[in-house]
Image (cartoon, rainbow, N blue to C red; front, side, top):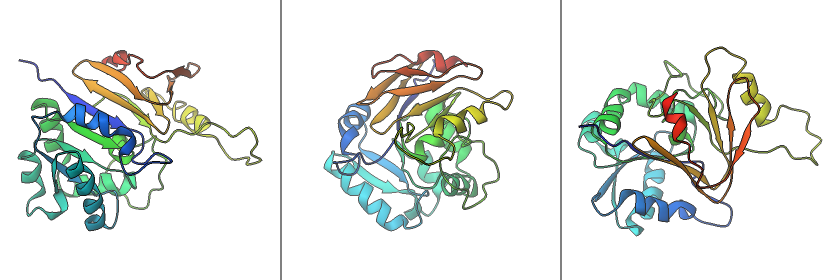
Length: 240
């Protein structure tokens, strides 16, 4: 029997004017449902893991879920194997991915999500590592992971926190769109789904749907980018 893969990939943890995960808390509750009682949090993207876990725990407890942080576990691999759901938060994507490799968590997270079908929530960096690679992250490489290849839970890349050019700005540096186009100048590069603040992608089995309050921008190699409204069906991206 084929397992139903379930992902909620959020662009950002905090939306202007709201608190931590407030803008997506309804989607989180609907996504996790009543079957999940405990969530395993992976705080590796930030240096102060204790404080990060405290913030995440307060939020998830307010939504009705207990939260365990993997950095408090004696055996991180065992913690993943016993988990009911996984949430990987934002921060620096390079730091996060290195820690996942250092703790031998890449294959075990893939197994739990892809084969066992436990829910996976990613925000920002946690969304980046759910994709093929972290090549389209916005973060600085402050540490050096052994590979840029990530969890590969979806067969494309995502650019969280996508920013449109400011028409009034005198800044002459590259725009986010230009940087993604440069990525696609390389051969065999996958699609990039650019998620603006307040945007998220829900994956349930072979179906992917854009959720949230803002549009997404899709970049395909060799083609002009396209704009997409919430509720857009992105299921075709799962068949790359």
